[in-house]
Length: 164
Image 1: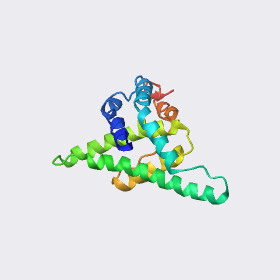
Image 2: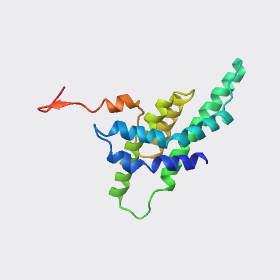
Image 3: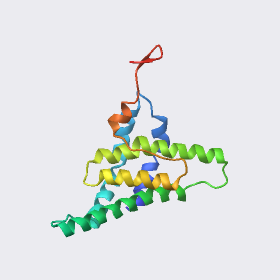
Image 4: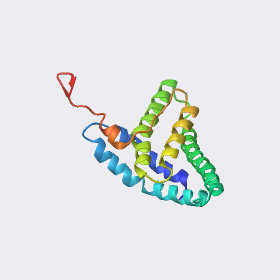
């Protein structure tokens, strides 16, 4: 399986994930997404091992950092390319904007939190690369990665309209 196929498998969960984005259903939905993302994780780790060796001296470490940036930028491009390749032609501008909002929400509530949960040597750089590529590729679509706990913590308890 290649990285594009694993990205496709992540987005197969987009509609369900967005429907299940509520205080009571987000945690189990995110857990299900974590299971679905297993192939993505494996392919990502395989590509990382091929692309970025661990440097032992300063020269190798500098080369490795350059490899890491190129690796992360390439994965970010794959996410953007996937969305662009699967855009439907002939739909109204309003429908296009609604789909882009859905993609943005899915990326911010499932994909980026999943990447940040990975805690591998490149998770922070990959999240930053995706945020940057996404904002450049899609007008008015700035996304920001946050850990699962941060997203889940955003559901506030209210009583009589006041946050508790």
